[in-house]
Image (cartoon, rainbow, N blue to C red; front, top):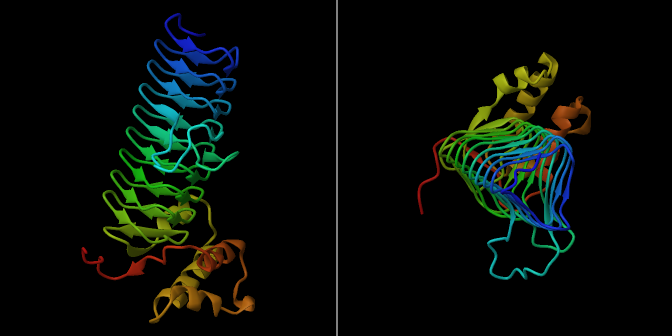
Length: 263
């Protein structure tokens, strides 16, 4: 299952049924689990773990050095890619910066061509990145989120579960779960269609919508409005996750209305 022209270094752990294409490179210290496919010219660097069924297309580079001037390449870090994730051609995923840590991509994700996942990012399960999505370091993407083509996400931003970002959006603030984003940090509303497709009940969607309006319809801080919601008004887990999102974060929260003006 390993093409004669591929380079699999001594010390690489490659499952017997993995398929490694022509001129692919798998470095010592990398792990390629059962059912994985590494296409022609792809590179799997040391410290990378591909779990079962991962497919990596041509010219992708998984586990490259962080683009961080302060990083010591001798630091033992890595990348972990979850089961059945598909990584298309020319995708780059950089390893973490802190010893013993991984940049993480969840299971059943799709990373379309030319995406970049920077050091210390964490993608949940079922995330879809359309073509040419760019992420800074330490970005967190929740389960089931969809990021449109050519979107750019600033470092340390959090994108909540089932959020949807439009193509060519520029994101420098946190995006709450279940919300849609467009342009520059403009919150377009709730991803109602996505919630229905994901199997959320009418009651769950109604409660999320109610809390969304409580947090965003009044002037002032979304964090403060979320903190003021009484416990007895939170009756489902999805609404709890939505509200709890506002407790954390370093970047502030996306706003409603017109797109932010350029600096």
